[in-house]
Image (cartoon, rainbow, N blue to C red; front, top):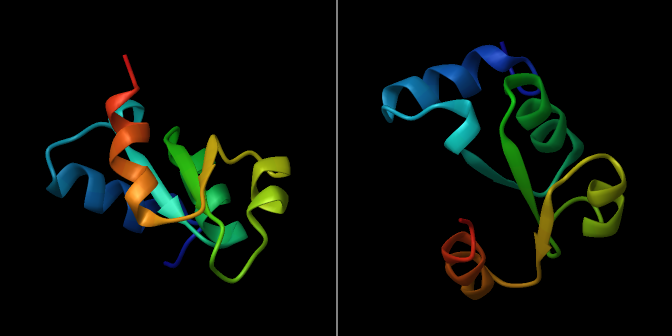
Length: 79
């Protein structure tokens, strides 16, 4: 199965020894957002991919970044 089906995402999350609640999926398309929603993870939309990041936010992405350099500070801000 392919995104947004939860199976490949759950397999990756389990292989990493993580849980959906502690997982951040970084994506540039609706399948990424919908896949994250399907497994109960958060999605960070990138503003330099296939789909406009504001559209991804409207569809349920948690946050957006304009550059990968913004990812680590965003992750460090999670309490």
